[in-house]
Image: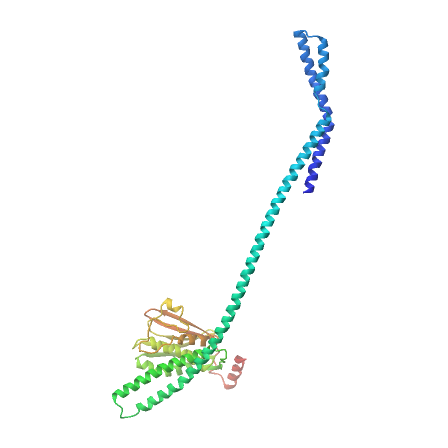
Length: 387
């Protein structure tokens, strides 16, 4: 700002200097012009009006005196103009500074208020985080207690139910039972089996979701596991006149926990039997696709709608389709199967079409064919896989 003032005053000083040096020339030039004009006028007057020559001589000096202004008047005028311009510029800059100061104060006030608001919001968020963390810990503790109580209750109920089923079997062996007694024993058997199925699913869910679960992984022939599951479900399929068709490749091996992986396949096959109508077909296939093992369980059931497919593998998921033979459903079978497959580094997919059936596909990492090798080579290959 000071540099601007210096430049302005410097320019005005230069103009003042130039004016002072040129003012005399300008005055003389103006006086000469005025004198010439007055002389011409006077001569014309003499010719036309015959005015006295003395009067003309007296008029000439007067015109010369009035033709120019004193130098000090012009200097005073320029100095006054310079002071006025400087005063105007100074006031203008002062007004600008005042406006900038007001804007600065206003912005500082807004920033301060915003900072205070943000600090208050931060305190609220921190309080809510602490509160939510505390609630989360309490919920986690309550969930652990609930899980332990559920495990204890399930274990305590499972043994009496198994005893009931054993006594029911012994009573049915009696020859002197009436038809009503046999019907009541059948009702006891069905109810006990349902309760045992529910308890087993709850125990499986608790175990598979536990952080303490450790899978006992071994190289196993997958077709042998599927056949065992098939034989365990064969009687239930025969009760509904259903046919289970197996198409298995006996040369396929995988690194699995036999007990838990059998449970996953059993849940898929039992679901196919449960939701398929009487006199329907079920297909179970095992094949290898590049470095993946594919296990497919296909049925001719009612299919699954797109809306239900979103929550198909959720815990306690219930479908609109109902079991066709009065079987029990806890909504945990598919959840358990998916969790088991994922713990084996695999994935499970579903292909379905309403009123035409559903196919569940398990994909696992494959292991090369081990069936045709001698024992020593097989042991060496297993060591490499496990390491």
